[in-house]
Length: 98
Image (cartoon, rainbow, N blue to C red; front, side):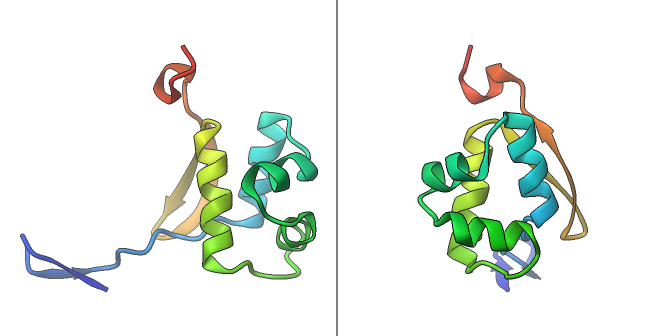
């Protein structure tokens, strides 16, 4: 928890966790296989595979790396009240591809 100096209210500064389903959907949308995402993110394929199958929860640093890698490719993760609910594609112009 972090204190918001302006409103003097405690807020949760932690971003919500991405879900295995979101990562699988993002990979599918991008046309990436597990090997490609693992290499691009710098994580082991085993770690990615176990996470996507729901067999393990990655360290927060690993989850953040996966999230940032997919966001850099144009994926936006959607959450409601800190719960993963989906993904969407960011238009190419917003991620600097045009």
